[in-house]
Image (cartoon, rainbow, N blue to C red; front, side, top):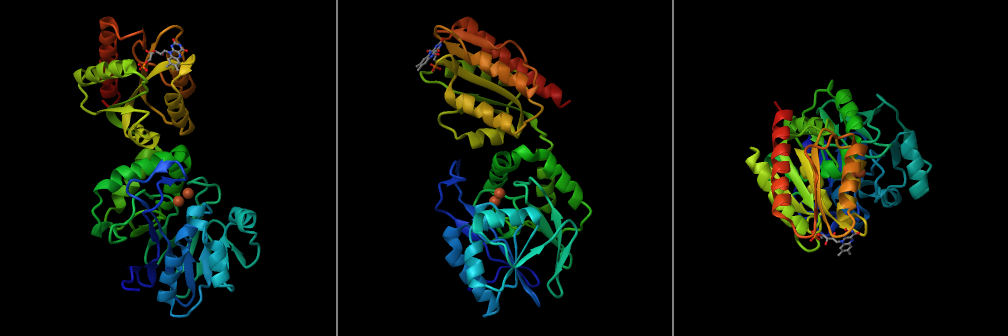
Length: 399
Ligand SMILES: Cc1cc2nc3c(=O)[nH]c(=O)nc-3n(C[C@H](O)[C@H](O)[C@H](O)COP(=O)(O)O)c2cc1C
Ligand SMILES: [Fe+2]
Ligand SMILES: [Fe+2]
């Protein structure tokens, strides 16, 4: 290997960058790519911590081989069974037939179900440890930080936490795996988008995991995606804590659907009202143009949400409807909410958007505007007023 990426004594980065895939999980855009991280501990025993997406297994295995000089891998620790990390398990087992797989009871159900592997297993539970020589790994269960079998591990000598998907982010690694050697500018937004889309539903499990891990002295966090965190440790832990409590800052997201521009005209008036109400943080998203993952990321950032939709076959516009479902699935909390719509003969969108608020147990602020035909002066004035009221409520919420 031309460069060994040494995280601590005997601990190496052996992950890969995916700059090919357009859509993570086949639906989330990857404008900056993504990394699948894996780590190798070369002690008296050799432990590999997770694998990578199968498409990158060649490069992955060659990195491992170049660090091991012919030694075999003794243990493969499986923190998470999603195929972006588990994809090369079967191949690894063929390459290193003596290798033992380390996981918990649930991991082994998945292993059997996906790969028909049920031998050479070492089962671990909360607090168990695996000795590697000088180093050891201690295991902590982190169920639902993203799947039910997820666990994390901690290496006490180097004070390194191997955190599975937690603290992960979209974005491939541009020239280094270390946060202090990378330009992190785009990672912060990508981290929030990753959180909102992948982990966003599981605020409580993330809080439980954070509480459990807060007692450990941690110098380095090795996540399964994105940079190895060592300089920005406090910041990433604080961000996860904040997002998993669904904490937001004053600002308004205005996602709208529009076929012919009428709803968009209303959206512009709403936004002007928000600014007049004292908030500069206003983001307008056309749901047909901006992928929902970016809209969700903004909803996890700001405390105001005003949704606009034309009525479409008696319902909300399909892409608006899909966005509302995604928000609901994530159990998003504490938003100052309102809505507006446009129709021609029998309205339906505003009703759907109001029912959404009821289902979320959010109060609807102001009077939702439901305009027939082209936007009237009166409707635009009401939209402006609505934006203003929402902005003021957003500012008040933070006082
Ligand atoms: C395919 C389609 C279905 C529609 N369905 C309804 C409907 O069920 N009820 C209604 O009142 N208007 C319906 N409309 C009319 C639109 O809601 C109305 O023209 C609205 O102003 C469009 O807003 P937009 O310019 O933002 O797309 C429909 C329009 C289209 C193109
Ligand atoms: Fe995952
Ligand atoms: Fe992952």
